[in-house]
Image 1 (cartoon, rainbow, N blue to C red):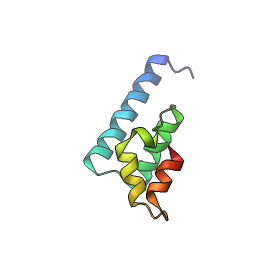
Image 2: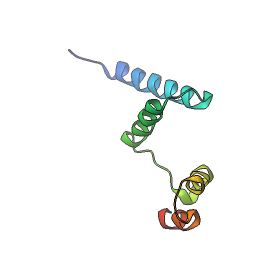
Image 3: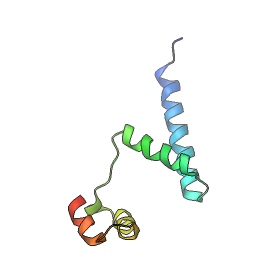
Image 4: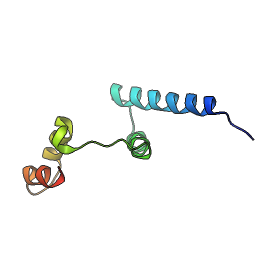
Length: 75
């Protein structure tokens, strides 16, 4: 079965919008957050801890021995 590029683009956009909406409303399940993370990774999207305050904030609350050291090593 042949699927057109237009259909694939629509599916990609719809999936991105749906995942974004679920995350923004706080309704995303753990599985959906994992799917969103994989979706970003699969599309070459990543964030440098040095350039992302939300990433720095997350690193600080995770159970690392020294969150500041972890931010420096990762960035």
